[in-house]
Length: 133
Image (cartoon, rainbow, N blue to C red; front, side, top):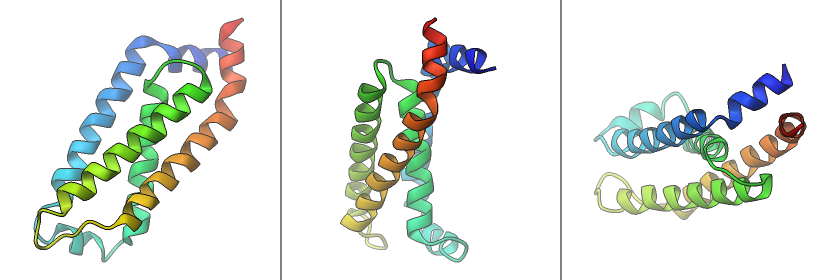
């Protein structure tokens, strides 16, 4: 099972699909997050920390699985990508009068990316070693 999972995660088509899904998800986050009143409506169900943390953790996982290289290289690429996406999201929010840029949101984004990547590094090395044999 581990070998099959490793082959699936390392397949070039899956990596490309992960990057495409990450780009689409980021676009949806930026667009939906800046719809007037949408953030306030969603805020009734989940706090900003939960929304930012979960969304950017998923983005980090997609970027990690979509990149190539060693585990450390993938981790750095994923965290940097999420840091840039989070900064871009906050920058875009600064242009809307009903939204505002907050460095704390960006810090939550980066923290969620780091935690997600650490979790993947803890789980995936076992499957990647099987795939190399």
